[in-house]
View 1: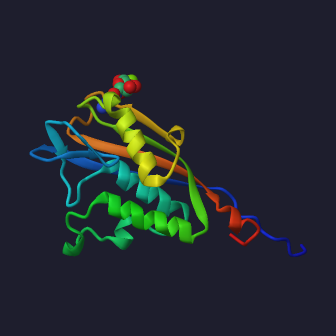
View 2 (view 1 turned 120 degrees about the vertical axis):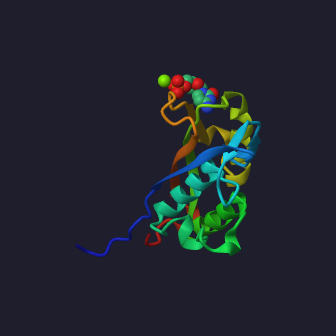
Length: 170
Ligand code: C5P
Ligand code: MG
């Protein structure tokens, strides 16, 4: 076939994260501190939404995962804020010539109820990613008692090429 310019296509990415819940820990979701008797046991702030989102973004470009850049067995990264991880990952997205178009996240947690915090988490994720709030979809599920000591997030992202990169090879 004759040489045809390859248009960069939209990309999707998927990520997951889980943490055990324990008393005396804080619960952070999407960069928002949630009032809760228990929080995530983690070296970092244990924010499953920001971790799943960061992995989803890296996966779209086959750039490995968070641990490729911030190994959790390296004391240097102990207590690292998830917000910082997301900033580094979003910079890689821009360098790849893409921008985030949509984010959907499903959080599984039995208690507390997250519905009352939906708007605050949505607004914070929009601020962190530059997305409009209507492109930040949040679904909350219980585990129906199957995993009461567990918080989990599954996140999907859709990305589109930056306008100035259209026509370049992807
Ligand atoms: O898991 P289940 O389908 O029974 O959850 C029912 C509803 O409870 C969800 O659709 C969601 O609106 C809400 N929910 C919540 N916070 C959670 C879990 C579920 O607000 N931690
Ligand atoms: Mg149900």
